[in-house]
View (cartoon, rainbow over the protein chains, first blue to last red):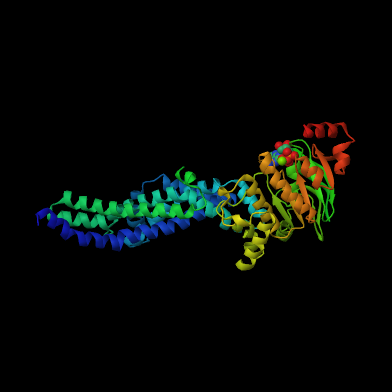
Amino acid sequence: MPRWLEILRDAFVPLVAAGAAFTIPLALLSFVLGLALGLVTALGRAFGPPPMSALARFYVWVIRGTPLLVQLFLIFYGLPAVGIVIDAFPAALIGFSLNMGAYTSEIIRAAIASIPQGQWEASFSVGMTWTQALGRTILPQAARVATPPLANSFIALVKDTSLAAAITVTELFQTAQRIAAANYEPLLLYSEAAIIYLAFCSLLSAAQSRLETRLGRHLNPLEVVR
Amino acid sequence: MIRLTGIEKDFGPTVVLHGVDLEVKEGTVTALIGPSGGGKSTLLRCVNLLERPRAGLLELGDLSVKFQGNQPPTRDQLHAVRRQTGMVFQAFHLFPHRTALGNVIEGLLTVQKLPRPAAEERGRALLQRVGLSSKENSYPGQLSGGQQQRVAIARALAGNPKVLLCDEPTSALDPELAKEVVDVLTALAQDGVTMIVATHDLRLAGAAASQVAFLDGGRVAELGSPSGLLGNPRLTRTREFVSHLKG
Ligand SMILES: Nc1ncnc2c1ncn2[C@@H]1O[C@H](COP(=O)(O)OP(=O)(O)O)[C@@H](O)[C@H]1O
Ligand SMILES: [Mg+2]
């Protein structure tokens, strides 16, 4: 076996282990929490009373207007100065969730707004309450509209989790850095890390297509393409 | 008995309904005709409270809702009114993510909280009534406009409303497809379904209705029997409009 292949093989298990232990859980948990936060923020902004709407706008404005890396540093290195000490993984989880929440809220808000007013009125006309109309008529249709941009955000998030390396989370990229520092093979190690990210993101893209098909059962093939 | 008394509605500075009085006997059809912008849609939407009148009295059988000042109707009133009315929209507004049967039973499941088998049984009977038994598993996107509107009629009837409100139910359809919707509504009228129908279709206003109201500038300008109002209108304005309808 050539030496380069041996290096890749030896690094494979620790890299995948770091991915399984940190990268994937961090991405999945942040996405789920961020999605919940995004939904609440979108609803608060679109339908809440003025103070709630203003709060939602403020949150989105701050998060979108500041670099993710700076946010992570603030949470992990900054907050201890005021007595709030958070471990690296939960700090990363908070940072990524807040970030996802801001971006997904805009996606969800746009998706809800794209559903015609007639759908609300039809729901009311059969006797539904506002909450039932939202839950049974509007959100299921909005979910189909929002799936492609949400999947985009999720895939971006998977890659962004590599930033957690900077706040000492021993995720995939940090592990690659550590091994490369020991064996002086950065080209091989970072290439291998890149391929593992690529493989995971490809799986997600495939899952996205299946989800779109399922949520779009009612659409005819032409509309799905469009 | 459905009775509207002194219904007024504004959108900000524009007053759209100037005190409309209308009485609809159970088992009869009232046609609303009149120029575009005359307030037909707004009046129908006031009956199921998609719009809130600023003044007037709405009576649906035993239920009565009085509008005054900025007092919104209570939640209970709102839901009672919605349960006693069914609405058919010009543009159908079917739920695109549900099948024909799913559309019809949606209110039965979520509002009446019927168990699914009972809801489906009733839904199938309604689809049969509008001639669409074979389409229960089709999504709206797979149906013609006429079929979609018939599903919408079945959906509006599902809750067994006191009155069916139809807002230009055939205006978005080709003449041929409009006919199948007219036929379904006419059959329902013969079965004694109470309806208020805003329409430009003389088949609906003439054959199916027992009274016709000419709504112009937010007022019932003239009210009469189909033969009277369409055949020999009292007002010049009505006469002009009717002759325009007859083309
Ligand atoms: N949501 C609304 N906001 C402002 N004006 C409205 C609104 N809906 C209807 N109108 C106005 O009310 C008047 C009556 O409209 P409508 O009830 O749709 O009449 P019709 O159905 O007889 O054509 C029109 O002048 C229309 O512009
Ligand atoms: Mg209209």
